Image (cartoon, rainbow, N blue to C red):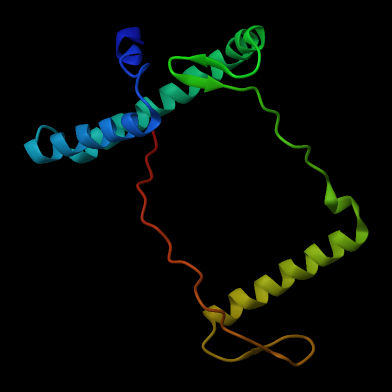
Length: 145
């Protein structure tokens, strides 16, 4: 990867980098430089490259950050090392597991009620309501390569 391109962002804030991306896309769209679908696919591939690039650098970057201590600043970026919280296996608790299973069954009934033209009743004879939509789905581009 060309380090010159990466280093151009070293002094910019997160908001400035985001704005630069938006400006670049708008310029290309307004000037009609490229096919927007092709540019989107190229950006997606570049994003994949950068994700794997960062994953490969992460262990060495953590080691380097540990040398400098808490609150280090590099490229106008504050660096802190944080640990994620522990994850517990609540399913090992029989009460929790039973409740989770009942929720799963209830969700399946609610989904069935949404799809059915007829009224649906649960095992106790209670009508299963058609729940309202919480949020609409989004449209996305699925890209496979």
